[in-house]
Length: 109
Length: 113
Image (cartoon, rainbow over all chains, first blue to last red):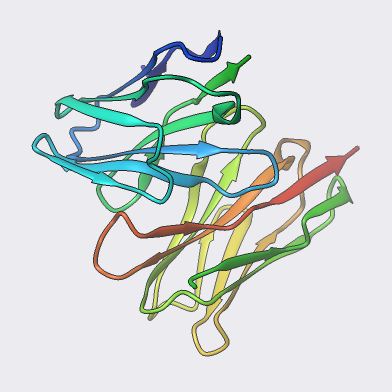
């Protein structure tokens, strides 16, 4: 089984809809991250969490929110999706090395 | 502003050949430097992690070097294989927080038969 899983893997939605992307990990790590990747750009940090009670904004948090439901679960929400949020989204965990999930390809029409 | 610049942007080589990818960074204070391999549509996978005191680190056919004085790193791939076709991303970690990772835009490598 994969160490970091993301659901859904692909999602197409419409402008204004609420979307939740989920991430689970079996590594037992405290630190979890959400990134987005756009063509021609490096991964950019949206939010990160160092433990269940800790939530921190990253470089591009506007338009997103997160919830750390448990050590193993970290979800990302788009309250009202817009087309420029179309991107590939990655969840990651770390102790010293970062382990990435397989990604969620989100398209907002 | 902390930045990580990678070159070339893309590279095509023949199977069996060697290649070297470059990374220049301005990140300060420096914590460690990482190289990741990202297959199309997949999450990045770690190849090497180097601290300030390390000059070179190998992982199979992948060898990363670091020159902290010139703030340059390179990833050398030996005897390339078709499966090496991917994007290779250089990542700097700075400061004391694991939240402070700066990602390069990557080098897209294509290995042709």
